[in-house]
Length: 172
Image 1 (cartoon, rainbow, N blue to C red):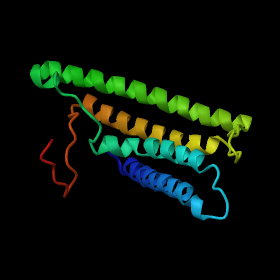
Image 2: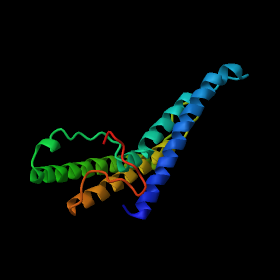
Image 3: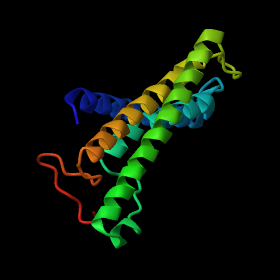
Image 4: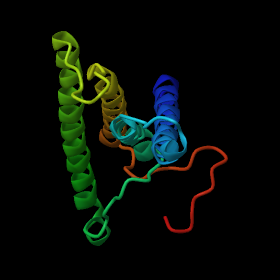
């Protein structure tokens, strides 16, 4: 994987982690509101935005780390030539689906920005802000999937190889 893509994946992973911590902060803010002299409003709405952002921003890192669920029940029982063909088909399908996701989430954010769409909650947040985080995560995921597909079509393996210094877990 190229160093630029590796850095982009790392940045989106950190942003995803920050978004996940923000979900917790919003929940604690809402729960702790009973001790405040005012009622915390819109915390659940922002927790939802942060949850969506954390899920999308972490997609690429999860994929690159090999933590997505991968069913090899069929692949382990076929010949190496059939396995190679099935792996190539699988990465082509993954590229198609991830590009579809990236395109439409990005288009949604762009249209929300053009139309100045606002949330219907108490705080009229421009919808392109949470959608842009989702679009960044989806585009980064597509780039990671496309890079993996390129390697597979060049003769590489679909299986995740350990990075330098990384130890493979026993369950892999």
